[in-house]
Amino acid sequence: SIYRAIIRRLLTTTTMSNISPTLTLNNTETKITDLLKQYTNYYNSSPNTKQPIVLRITGGWVRDKLLGHECHDIDIGIDHLSGVDFAEGLKEYVEKSGNTEALKGSIYKIEKNPDKSKHLETCTTKIYGFDIDFVNLRSESYTEESRIPSIEVGTPEEDALRRDATLNALFYNLSTMEVEDLTGRGLQDLKEGILRTPL
Image (cartoon, rainbow, N blue to C red; front, top):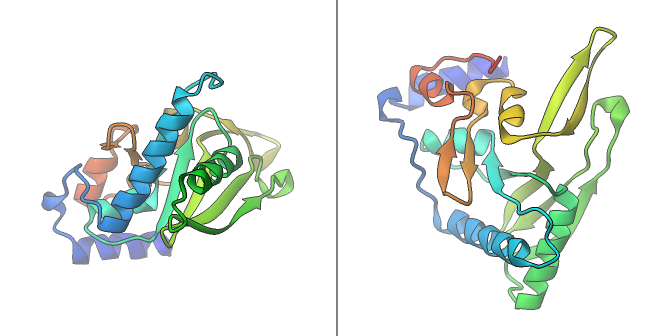
């Protein structure tokens, strides 16, 4: 299975004791995070902003960076704002700044589809050549009648706890530029090569 493959890769390509909760970004990742932080500061400083937002890189990118592997697929988790609204505002900000290199191409909106357990719209685009997905942080709840969860906008903790494994529930907070281990076990499990669910 994919999880056995992940664990096998961890055990064969990484010295577990060397994993540190500090990330070293390459030049492109630095440009991406700088741009996202600049726009977030711009958005949060607007008098029309009702609630400031915090961005987090979520999931596999954080795990892979901690292991010293490159990853070109970045998921941005957003609180208090939809991924579509954030990406469209970012595109407008980039166009006004004249930074034509940063965001090329279209923003692709992925619609809600509750029948396929997709209750929140998301979007994807390319920033400095990297695939970037913008998604809401979310929570999941189940009933006895269905295996399809009910999904709503959630807190960072709720989003971490709904993920498949603790080592995939690590976040990189772009406000603090620090790794967040909101399950309390992700970093240790990554060091020890343990695959367990957050719950």
